[in-house]
Amino acid sequence: MPESASTRPRPDVGRYVSDAWRERYFAACDALYALGAPISWERDVETSYGTTHVYRHDPEDPAARERTPVVLVHGAGSCSAMWYPNTPALGAERPVYAIDTPGDPGRSVQRAPIHEPEHAARWLDETLAGLGLDRVHLVGSSYGGWLALNQAYRGTHGLASVTLLDPGGLEKVGLRFFVWIFASLFATFAPKRLRPRLASWLEQPVLVVPELRAMIRTGVRAYRIRRPVPQPLTEAELSAIRTPLYLVLGRRSLLVHPERQVERVPRLVPGARAEIISRTGHGPQIDHAERANGLMLDFMNSAERGLSSPL
Image (cartoon, rainbow, N blue to C red; front, top):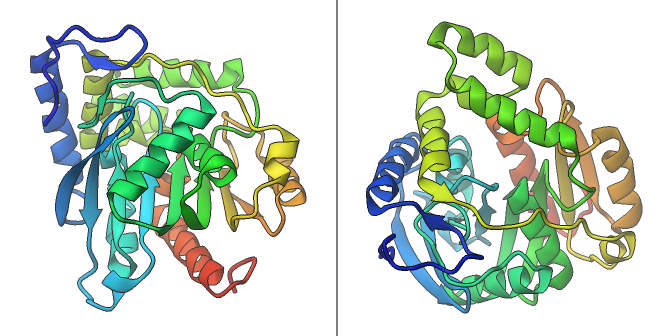
């Protein structure tokens, strides 16, 4: 269970501003979870950095439940509810575990910082061990992409593959990304009739999905993130990764330079595959969910067959 927001927090960990705002955020999240796959169960995993809340989505096919599971790590300022367009397709083929990252709004409770790379890897190792998972397909979006990439380099748990969806960790975050973040936030207050046009202009699906818009707006008001921007991995660190790696970028991404990274990552990471999805920016798994889901599942299947890229 979440700790009371009235408990005096550490100044270097994330926190809710009040119990009331925490409950409002949970209600907004639950409305978004209802759009995704049914949740089989929820569980709290104790780690050295706090309590990690995890959701499991199970396939209906008993045989599919025995396949190597997928672990989803969301982006900064969000929670596992953001995966609502992906859990139905992924969860039909494999067990899916969606993790609320401590330090972001969600049902996890942070007690120590995890933004240093070594601590982030240890936190995720402890979470996977607490779930009894010894081999997983790890998928990360944005900040979660940095966590997944960092895990491929530093983690000790078995990774069958790593999929990075417009991730952090590849290059320094530039001013253009923060301008986009703030412009998108202000656009959530625009009149309803203007939101589709702004969504297209900003490449921001948050504006046209009411439940997603409500969750993001409530999270900004309810939660205080206390975390610096993570530093990108060096070329030497990227070159040391041996986990099957799949990089999916939006052509109009403002977090990374897509053309640069789609050449760079496969050159540095042995066997890595990278591609760009057109007509999207920072959220390819939301804007083009059907295609992204198919690409991710194909890659996971290929990784298990020992192939470097999907057939």
